[in-house]
Image (cartoon, rainbow, N blue to C red):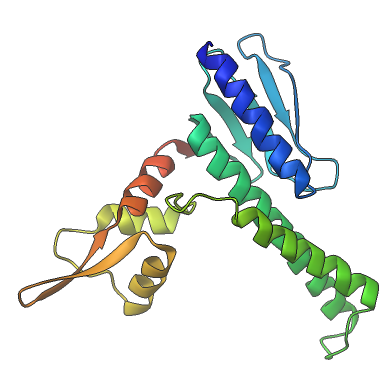
Amino acid sequence: MLNIEKTLQSVRGLLDRLGKEGVEFTLVESKYSDCVADVRNPNNKVYVFLECSIRPNGTFVWLDYDRHKGVCDFDEFRMRIITLTADACLDKAKDKRKQWADLCDGTDTPMPDSLAAAVSDMEDKANRLKALLEPDDPPLLDKRDTAILKELKPYDVVKPAEESQRLRELGVLERRYYIDQVFDALTDKGEKALKFASHVERTV
């Protein structure tokens, strides 16, 4: 089986799994002459990619709604589409909570059952999607986190302590001890997160 055939088979399997969680992406013939297929967003206002196309060599070219673009393999694409979709669901839930709070002028008024159920469904969907991630899948780093990890020197500690704790909770840093030294070091997940971050650039 050709590499592109394996990639398309893997993509179909992934999109089918996402569809079972209520997020139905579609795989269509690409509108670009140098690509073989495009991944289209669901119709339920879950916005993940502005564009995402698959090249003949099996790599993915994508542009997200934060104006980041990149090129990656299937493993990174899988992690990225799951994470971004889960985040999009959480953002929708947060927006609805904020809209209700604004409507109530900040008073502690319970949401109507129908709205509360819709918000809960989106949050549950996000949690189910995140459960699809593999144990060694790294988080998506923002510009600030990427800079912190890149600038970390051997036997150094990330400061302030709250930042070190947050990055350790993300799984990209670990606290190590050597004789009388205490320092932070990148984990395997942290190395992978930086590798994925290096594939991304901002378009504006």
